Image (cartoon, rainbow, N blue to C red; front, side, top):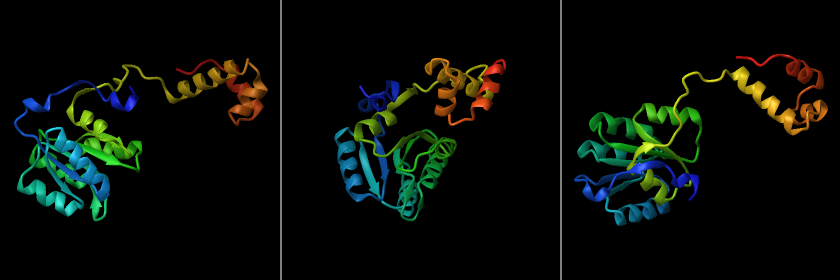
Length: 191
């Protein structure tokens, strides 16, 4: 089983749910068509759109229980759809898909109401698992996280040990001046 299919530890059963409405918003027409068929075969009642304007109009008519929205659509940002959906139906689950993944956009997506964030290419199973997830297996925030200085120091120590405690080789691998590395190694570990 790949890491991408282990999205959640627990999932919900779609058959027991009353509202199985799903909005799919993506401007990649072949992908949208395939995903529509795949989600319909899993029991969803799918509405497929390819613009932000159509997505907003659709959710203003009837806000769906689920949404899978591409981050970048031809006429704007898919986060606008997620934000509006959360405002109209707070219990909805929205997933953002994007080929332009980075941590800042993932944080923004979740703050605006997205339940999860998947990088493209995502297949129908990954999307379904993300929609149905009750509990993510993402790590909890540690009570006392290490400082950035401590993380850097531990990384340097690890490379130093892997290089057989050879300062010159470690400095080369870390792209660091040898004397700088020697000064770091001579210091005690930061807190």
